[in-house]
Image (cartoon, rainbow, N blue to C red; front, side, top):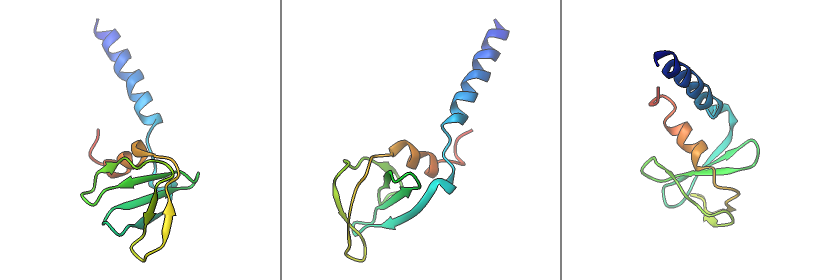
Length: 92
């Protein structure tokens, strides 16, 4: 029984590390007028952090206004990538 539990633990830890997001995948981050931040990844997809520091949903195609007044359109909705970036050092 112990061997089975150890095998399951080892396999599950491999699965978790496969989904880890490296901060080097972020091409740039843009602050929005409402205090939130949009992360643009190197593959062109985007994810959003709200003004409270939480990964948040934003519908793909939604027009957002940057802090300097420019308009950008949301491409994708990479909540899981932003969540991994924000909590990289909080998970074991």
